Length: 263
Image 1: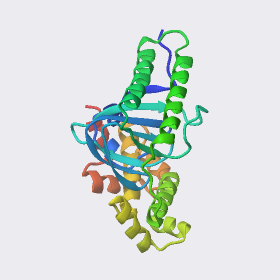
Image 2: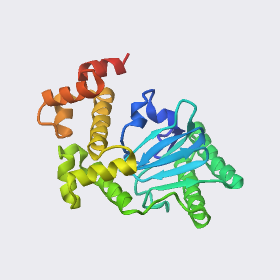
Image 3: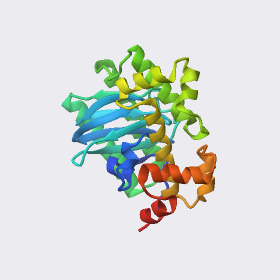
Image 4: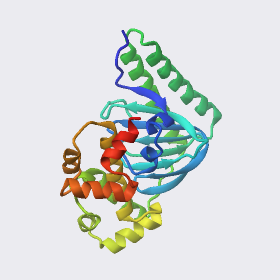
C-alpha cells in the first residue's frame, strides 16, 4: 500500500490545477518550495520584486513568501514541496539562481528524477530516501551559492517592497488595508504605492488585492466551506462584501465560481 509522502515532486503546471490564476496572482505556500524551470521564459514577482525567469533557473521559496509567476504557454518545470522547518539545510531566505553550468544542471535534474521515482514506486523507507535526496539538493544549492551569485537586489526601494510583501503575506487575511501596512512600515501610502509600482510593476494596493483574491478563489473552489465562513476568515466585514469583491474581480459570484470549478 503506497505511503503518503511529506516531500512531493510534481510539475509547475500541476500547481496551477488547470487555472492560470493560481500562479499568476500573488500567493504563497504552506511548505517550502523549489521551482526548477526546464523550458520557457517569463516573469515572476518574488517577494514583491519583479524578475525575468527562464530555462535553468532555480527558485527557492520558503513557506509563506509571496510570489506570482507567468511562464507562458510553453514554459514548464519541476516543483518540489518540502515541509517547512525540515532541518535539511536549505537557506532561510528566498533565492533565485540562474544555473549556467551544464554539469550542475544535470546533477540537480538527476536528484529530482530519483525523488520522483521513489514516490512513484513507493518502496520501503521512501520517506527516508526522499529526505536524503532533499538534503543532497540542499548541499547542491549551497555549493551553487559559493560559485553563483543569487539574483538579489538591495536598493532602498526593493528593501521596502520586500518588507511590504512580507507584511502583506502575514496579514492579508486580517482585513487590514494597504494604508495600515504603510503606517507599520513608517511610510505614506503614496510613497509605498509608488515604490511598489517601480519595483514590482504593480501598486501596493494591487498586490494586496491579488493576494486576497487568490486566497478567496482557492477556498471557494477547493473547499466546501460556507461563503460566510470564508469571508470572515479573510477579514471581510460581511458575506455580501465578499460576494461583491469576487464579482468585481472575476465577474462571477462565489456560487458560480464553485460550480464552474467542479464541472
